[in-house]
Image 1 (spheres, rainbow, N blue to C red):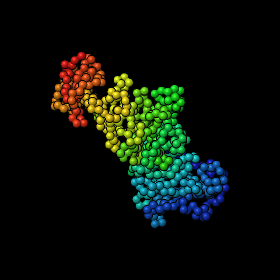
Image 2: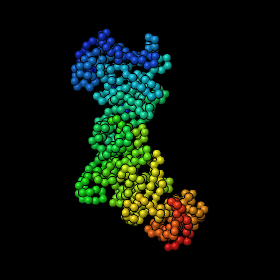
Image 3: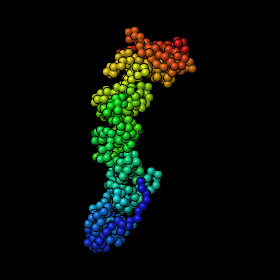
Image 4: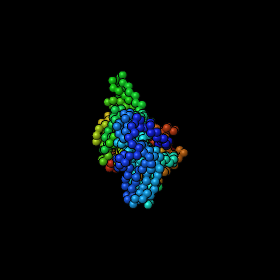
Length: 500
């Protein structure tokens, strides 16, 4: 926020002008409508100690209409009750111009106060200074100062367009900028203020790119209710693939840069979020911004290429006020998941696809799939399975063996964290046996898992899996039994008696 005051020079602001009358009664009568207002039962008046009225003939003057009247002088703002002056504040030298917001007194609605008197003054061709005055007890006029993020108080704010009240009942001011820092686009630097004890205190600042430029230069744009979301990078670089590969097909373009998600409504930027560096390619899943439809919501997905095995995607949501945030993903061991695998991601690939996300390993030639549900704010784990099939079409429908493998994976993950309580929920015997199993292991903990063998042995509803460990190259056999659609670890080996 700019804090430096300006000195108004009549010659430089008015340009070539013809002086019409200094203090004529007709000039005062014409301007009277812009000089007074009522706030409650108090009359607020803008008075001139000495006023010069001129007609502007400079077509390049951005502070006055060509052929329009301007008024300059020293002004007072006063409050009156029953014809008596209650208070008076010296505003110093002002420039008033017909047809502009700096034509006299204006009204601004401040949340928590109501209507206040506003006086605008030009500050360059793109900004205006704004001074606000509220009516206090007994009809007294008091300035409403602005407080920046460092606690510095100023008697004025700066704006390039009329103030508005946002959805959170904060006063919003925006200043025009020819090049914003985050996007290098023309637009506005916006600030919202909350009213506290007679002052407007800075609450939030953000950049608002010009939507017309966003429409031309964004990688993607999608509609979320009344909002539009742009995927934009100021440093985006484009290249053309010369041969077919995992990233893209020959002849298609790839794009790379540091991207932001920018939410707009009615050609105004509401919020934005830095999503970091990404690489996108035409004709692939990682081609830009995608959407995921869930009951009552439409989530945003930003897929990113990692390797020939697939990529990952991070999810975002737009709230009712236009704010954008990362969607929390809760994994199988109640852990935070940063990104979802996209080797198979039907929810991203097509509308209405299930919330299933699979990762494929070319090393182990197996897929690991996880299913989720959306609870209104988070993606929450519901199911998990391993697959040794290379046919991705089969990954959506897990077999009993795949679910049994995933149950054992979750059980072992809890043991690696020494979380006996969570591991006990996946064990069909007494929870004390889980603790005794760990106590029998070397150093009283489970060694680092090296992997599960692809093949299992099945006896009825029981699956037996062999697990190898990195430390000491041990192998242990675990039984997992099915109970309806659920599975539990049925038998624990003797950790201290592991076989090589």
